[in-house]
Picture 1 (cartoon, rainbow, N blue to C red):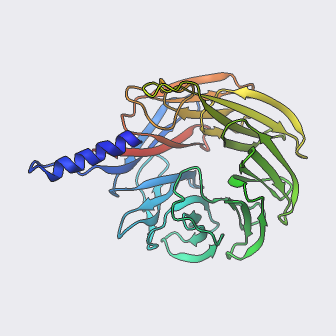
Picture 2: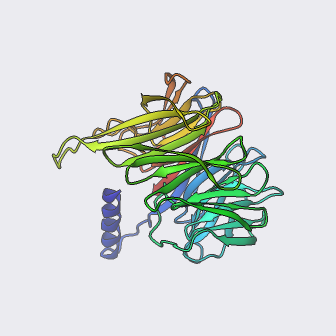
Picture 3: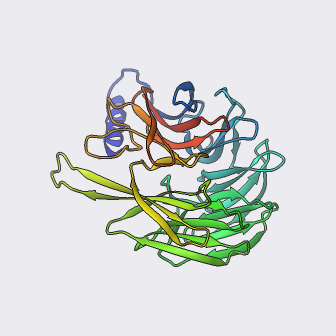
Length: 370
């Protein structure tokens, strides 16, 4: 990313010193749809905003797609980019909230969405983009909180309303945006994900000073159990899911530098899957080969995506010149079902992968358009 930034600065400087015409670089969003066998079905570019950025994608009930992010109309604003089931454009939702952006979203009953924002609010919007209500989730908004893997996440609660997780908190809200309960974790804990549990509660987790952590909350927000998995180096929690076998599985990764040669730094990432019982008891632990851009599949396996880099042993979210986008599907035993490559072009880092209702997958990311 530093190289891209410096290159952009060079372009801008050169343009300012020359009378030659040039194209102002823009950021667009690319979306790729593949089927259950790893074959491309369609791909598209969302390019009607000069600096559109997507953070999280979901599939909607009608088979289309919605991406929470930011637009630049009249300044940085929250925007939800939408696509039809076959990648065709639909009406995007924007609303005037200067210097804000969408982070995570859930489809709301009756149409529209609930979306968390960079400024740590949950906003309910209707299908026309009108804000129906806005609830503050935390009083410690950080204007520098911009990384994709940070920020508040939201899920639909099975009995209605929403559950959110971010910073060192989890907040439960009803359909009208009223806070039902707030749970605060230890100060060093940063929540990165949340899923609904069959008990009516929720499982959330993230990173902490010791490594990674995961906890079960009951329907009232009380901690039922919590587990911490210490790591020797900085860790990242990739995924938490309830498996078809009834276990809670989490995947986390740790990265260490193995070469101090500034010309060719080498980095080794080790990824581990841990399985817990419904009561939080450790059932199993094993090494898996995945990337941070990952989704749990309905059959108990995983699919992950990324680009090969000569300095890393795993697939990376940022693209590398000459390296095609790879998507790998694993079965329940962690064996490769298929490994597909897609030449989608350069300057297209991948942000996310989801499984779709037809058993296939949809991916999206950022596209630097020169």
